[in-house]
Amino acid sequence: MKLNLQFATYAAKMRQHIIDGTDLEVDARFVDMLAPRGSTILDIGCGHGSAVNGLRARGHAAFGIDPTPEVLNVAFDNFDSDWYRELGVEELSPVRLAGLGILDTYDMVLIAGNVAAFLSGDALRRAFVQVSALLKPGGTFVVGTSSQSRGGPQDQDDAGGATGLELMRRFSDWHLGHYSRDSAWSVSVYAAPGESPRPESPDGMFILK
Image: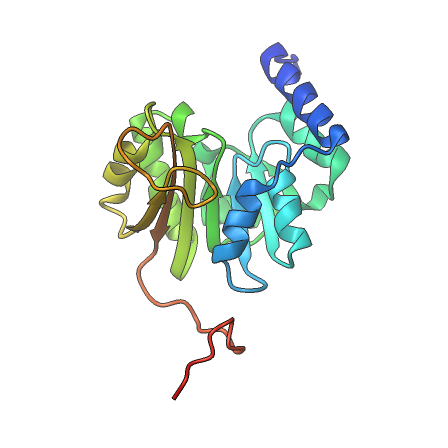
């Protein structure tokens, strides 16, 4: 297989970040905040794998897919390789995931790191359709990407319009920053139709009666 130098350079940079202990889990903390304990989570375009590792460390059944071997090898070398599969978003479907030996339905799906910016309009619309097929009733879809490029908030909302996924919140960063049209970054939170099961524990809510 021919080595892609651009991907190899990026992979080397991310490998060094992991060695240096750089915080690469901010998106994982955001998703963990939204997720019920022990959620099933799919990271599309997982790259170097840090988000999946961070979610696993927090007790979730997280898996990652990525089409780029050079980058995915960083995840294989640093974390449990059984958590990751080589698969592109254009090939995504419940059948393909099941064929790769991982879950085919999820409580949450994550697309981060500008994956959306590299998709054509048609590919983004297909991605939203496939994500809606993967999500359990009431499940959550989180998209983090640059706001002022292809795949930004308006493209996402257009893509989600025919899927039943409803925009619930939009932030300017992973720290719940206020989003405006001038924001350089966006984190969009969509919800699938239906209600997710209520947790058996109070989950932090103790209602006075």
